[in-house]
Length: 263
Length: 146
Length: 176
Image 1 (cartoon, one colour):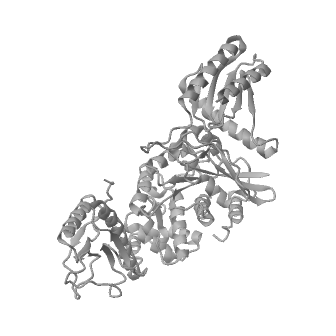
Image 2 (image 1 turned 30 degrees about the horizontal axis):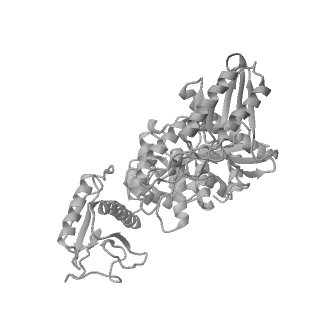
Image 3 (image 1 turned 120 degrees about the vertical axis):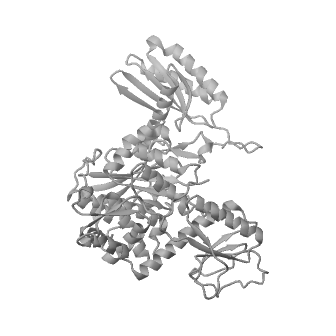
């Protein structure tokens, strides 16, 4: 039994509906979902089979009983944004669909593993949806308590999960990884982060917003006692050879030597 | 190419290349060596180890000391091979002598066909190294006998 | 000649030698010997060090050292850590308890990494590896009050090894 995560208390439950599910599979599904909630993976909410007029559930489970009279939304009718758990042989879908699969006969262990992945996919989708509307809403709320964003020091509390880094463009993906690595070494302001990564502030804020939703960063005022960073200790195993141009020069030459100079 | 141990019919883990027979023989030859060169001869302790640092037999030292010496000798031996090869004096070293204030550590290759090993000897400054080397090579030859 | 060093450590078979080979300008110098312990799943193992290098100019070079993976060679870890600019820890995710493996290296190299930089690269991940299993590594680090980049990498690919080194350099750069 893996150690469960603790879902944020104010996170809305993951809604799910099931169609074409044999009774046995539906009972097993609901039991494993209940266990998943008890383990702290996420809160869940079962909804009746989706109606055209109702909002789409976060997860649609399509069971193995395809002979059922219920309508089965097969591609291309399936909403490309819909997260789907397909039980049995899944059709080939394009990359726009997020489809998870469990083979038949259905087993609890296999289902539990897929549910963790599904929760991560749902959270990622929710973050994207929020970011396309008000990407700075959290930070703006925080900034209201301070004089300006310039005075916010960002502190990384733990290394963020892989889903925080997924972006459409490879360049922005790379920027996110570098931002997180910088923050792992020291706290810095949003302006510093933007300058060091050569990324627009909006991209930095988007990344920080993703991290802040799940509590991976903390924002503090510059100059507050809490943000006083102790001086970095003198390295006990510092390189013996002095480097021309100091450490900055050395790191620059290493980047050139590795072919990473454009970073 | 050294033959790899085959799994048993019941799919148990492959046996180590260090056999009980090897261990028994190693213990025996080291005991004889110590009887000949211990005491006034200057040899304080000795060990035979696999080249990857696992101890096979030790005499006149604790098991813990034997494990440490085996691992250390393995690393030194491997670096010796690297040095010989890089400098161009051969593919492998044959022996390495470390001299310090209170004695020597002597490392000799044992080119066993199935399980290459190293002989490590801790000896005092009074030892006659030439004679020691001669008999150490006999120990190595004994270990390589079928 | 000015010499600088980056160290690669991690579990047996995690890919230390492979990672160095992917970026070294010279053929990697090895101290591989035949194993007597079949449980490690390899025919040979590093017992002293791997060595590769990258030229930084006419009179300067970056040395890439790989340590032996097994704990009985921990004396070599201490020797090789002297003067290193940073550490890459490679963890073989197919082993029985990779989080415990990571804890071993974080503990042994804590002095080095607290003063320099570190990247943890998880290798040999497969279709069964998921975000939850990767979270065990960041959970472990959080318990030790450490934060270092944790990435999944195939160290047979040069670009992926360069990505690891990029993140190492990024940490060193912000400390200046």
